[in-house]
Amino acid sequence: MAISMYTASVPVLIQMLDSLSDVLSKGEAHAKEKNIAPEVFLQSRLFPDMFALVRQVQIAADFAKGIAGRLAAADLPAYEDNEQSFADLHARIAKTKVFIQSLDAAHFDGSEDREIILRPGTPKEKKLSGHAYLFNYGLPQFFFHVTTTYAILRHNGVELGKKDYMGAY
Image (cartoon, rainbow, N blue to C red; front, side, top):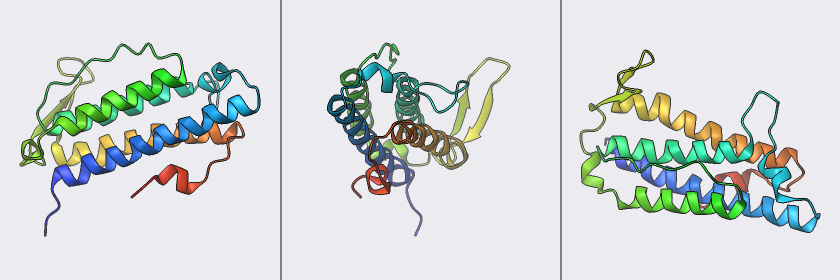
């Protein structure tokens, strides 16, 4: 039995966005408990040449909406990338989930063969089948940024474990 592109993407994205939100809540609570300014965590990074936590969450949300939207051949909502607080990041995750959940599963039918064009019209343009886009590009990118957010908080002393990363499934 073949797995649908919808089933391979949307439930996984929702699970991990929920996990990301929960991890952020634990980070926020830890900062408050330890009397650490939230900005310390929000601007933390694992290494100087990596993006800070805020940008990691923004990119994770962008990949989530991009994966689902492109596979469903839907117009992607534009986000301003102006989040500056934990509340802002939670709102971004929430609006991403609303968008993803609004997509009709039937629009994913046949998307494994749909051509996905990244950065159209630029020297970095890349064309992928929907299948390659989901499994070889989109999901790995999404998981990288979710994992890096988790790692930044864990590195800063937030008590997190694998169960927090995985979320409810």
